[in-house]
Length: 440
Ligand SMILES: [Zn+2]
Image 1 (cartoon, rainbow, N blue to C red):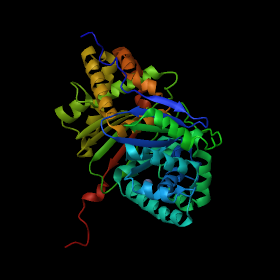
Image 2 (image 1 turned 90 degrees about the vertical axis):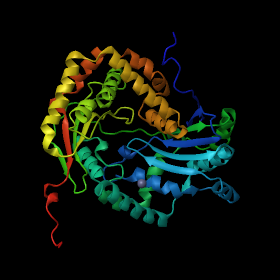
Image 3 (image 1 turned 135 degrees about the vertical axis):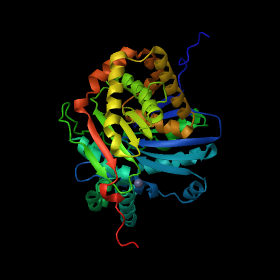
Image 4 (image 1 turned 45 degrees about the vertical axis):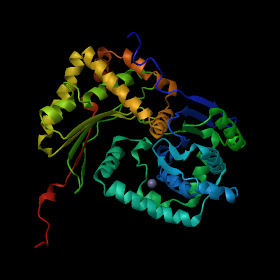
């Protein structure tokens, strides 16, 4: 067959932007008469100012119960009986509100969401209630949960100035000090049409959605132009001491090697693609991959994964290598295998047939995720927030085809420099094996 596996675009979309700057991205999928509707604001926890961490997430909580300022009466009753699946999510770089309805309820939903974009009424009692909900969430997620505590401690040391050093949920003393005025100011600054986009995914009539968009959202004021002025990490920073987190409920010994990456999206996109394929190879079940060696062959690890975080974040993050093992006694051996394995690829590269398998595997993963109308909206919205374009994703696999084994060898030498890697460890406290006192 002459046809090329990756020749067709992975998804088809159309987009339009209203005069107030609100962008719509429409992606049809006629499999079932349902629509997923996600409203994205280009603001996340990394846009908060020092001392005000947790604002973006706090606002998300309040938005969930916030009603449009305009009188709704019967409309609200109709809307509430429309059986909406609803959720929201705050990341370091974005906040989104997700709803899923049957297609016949789409105009009602658009009217409701437009009302919330026009302005919401915040309520003082709700503000206090949510503060306790959030503090509880912080306790469960960031303090009582071993991996939550670990990432919080690691990131706070890995980043020197960039606000990625702060947890999304915020630091406890900041959350306690936040006021309703802080929330209102933050909302006023970031939540408006010119700082938002909406992804409509599923079964709908695009021409009709354009009309409704114009009718319901068209006359909302664009809002002030906002700039994201985040402090950026220095390009050269000293290697940090290993970050060791001990937690009595740590299930296994967990070890990470984190290589900081510079901003490669604009100038060195090809390098990112090479790192990304390398990541898929190392953590995949391929012959000679580190996953295969550590988990299957030598059984030193219960899990092994790598991540090249560039589609998930707006600003540079890292190339991460993580290992889970039953105990920490084999750490040196594991580290030697990882370092030797990567050095080996830097010297000899990957065989063309292995590289082809890695591309194919990665392609399948994308296609599977894009098949789901919710995951598709989540994935592509995140990609847009990371400063990439939908066309870049559509041509991802033509671009992956151009990545050679020599590129992979080159990026290892250029970016995976051992002297610069940070080490993170999560383990049980050494005393945890002692019998509990006071038991008989
Ligand atoms: Zn929450």
